[in-house]
Image 1 (cartoon, one colour):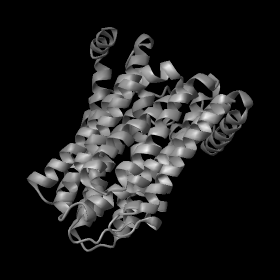
Image 2 (cartoon, helix red, strand yellow):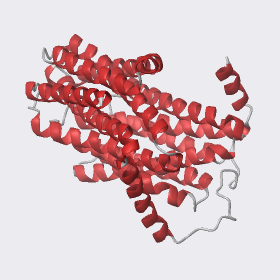
Image 3 (cartoon, one colour):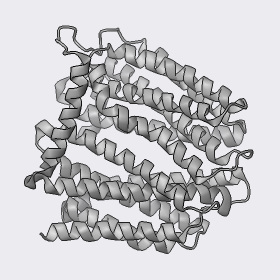
Length: 420
C-alpha cells in the first residue's frame, strides 16, 4: 500500500522519528493529565460534584486552545522551536507536579484550576511547535503524509494516555494525585526526548526579518477578521453554513458529555469507582464511533456530497439521541455514545472537506483558526448551559429534548441550504 510505504520512508528520517517521539510522549501525557483532572473533579469520593464544577473543568481544558491558539504562531516564529518543546514540556512537568500537591493539600479549588489552566495553555504552544517543525524534518514530497500520520498518532497517544490514567486510578493506586504524577513523568520524558535534536534543527531561520511583536499580534487579529469577511462572501456560504452547523453539533455533544459525567457519577452507578469504569467504557465506545466515522464518511460523503452527509448525521442524532437518552439507562447510553461519536465526527470530517474545497488557499489557515475557536468555545458554552439545566443526578428530560431540537434544526437548515 502507498501509505504504508510512505510511512516506512518517513521513519527513515531521524529528525521525524525524534519529533514523533516527542509528540507521542507529550500527547500521551496530555491524555493522562486530562483524565486525572476529570476524575478529580467528578469522581473523587470526598467531593460533591456539580455540573458547574464539570463546566469549570472543561473551560480549563479547552479555553486556552481557543484564546492562545491563533497567536501561538507569532511567538513560535521568534523562538527556537526545539527550545519551545523542551522548556514547554519541562514547565508542564513542574506544573503537573504542583497540581498533584494541590490535590493532596487543603488548598482552595481556584489554585487547582489555575495550575491546570497553565498546563493546558502551554500545550497550545507545544502542539503548534510540533506542527510547525514538521517541514524541517521531512522532504517536501512526503510532507502531506507526515501531516496526516503525525497528528493521528498523537491523538492515538492521547487516547492511550487516557487509558493508562484509568488503569492507574482503578488498579494501581486509587489516587488522582498519583495519576497526575504519571503525567508529570511523561512530560519530563518529552522534554528529555526533545534534547536529542539539535537546537537549530527545527527552526525558525534566523535570517528572517521579524516585525515588532505588538504589530504581529494586531496583524493576527486583522487576519482573523479578514477570514470572517471572506466567509461572508456569497461564494463561501456553504463553508459558513457548515461551520455554523458543526459548531451547533459540537455544542450538543458537549452538553451531552456533561450529562453523561453526572449520570455516571450519580444516577447509573452506586460508587465513584463504578462510575469511573462506566465513563471509561462510554468514552471508549464513543471513540469507536469516531473511528467508524473515519471509515464510513469518505464513502458516504462521496455518494451524497459533504453537505448532505452533515444533514444525515444531524438527522440521525436528532432521532436516536432522545430515543436512547430518555430511558437514562446504561446500555442505551452506551449505544448513544457510539451514535453521537460517529455522527459528530462524520459531520466534522465533512465540514473540514467543505472548508478546504470552498475557501481560497490564501485564507484557509485563518478560517481554520476561526474554526478552532468556534469548535472549542461551543463546547465550553455547552458545558455552561448544561450546568444551569442539569439536576444533581444528571437526569434532565429538558436537556435531552433541547439537544434533539438543535440537531433537527441543523439537519433542516442544511437540507434547505442544499436545495437552494
